[in-house]
Image (tube, rainbow, N blue to C red; front, top):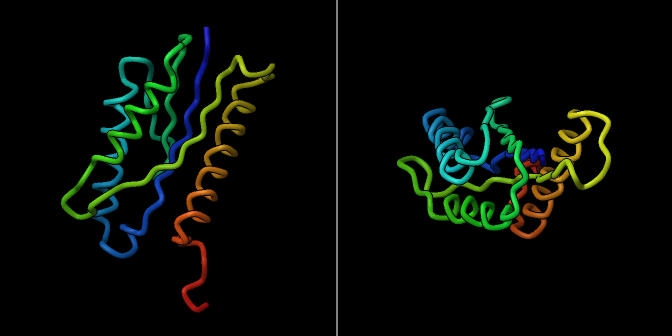
Length: 134
């Protein structure tokens, strides 16, 4: 049996620039896109404001295809307040190495998510972490 943890965090400015309705729309969009791609394989949990985890407790041989469905669903999404959504994620399979705890798996998924997020910012030159006074 495999255990897969996906750490999601969208990259957005919507809540700050378009208001809380746009932020709420993005939370619902992220949830719906995850349900579409992952619900038949595992459980989806919202663990924080804009962070989600997907747990897949069975070995999934087609994880790349499942991720492609998710990526396409995210790419094709358009909302009322925001035209698009972008989500970073980290994927860890429990069979990758010997883990002592679920916390270790979660930490690695989080690290991979933030690496993905950093790569996005570097490529897109859209880093919301930068000061607006630069």
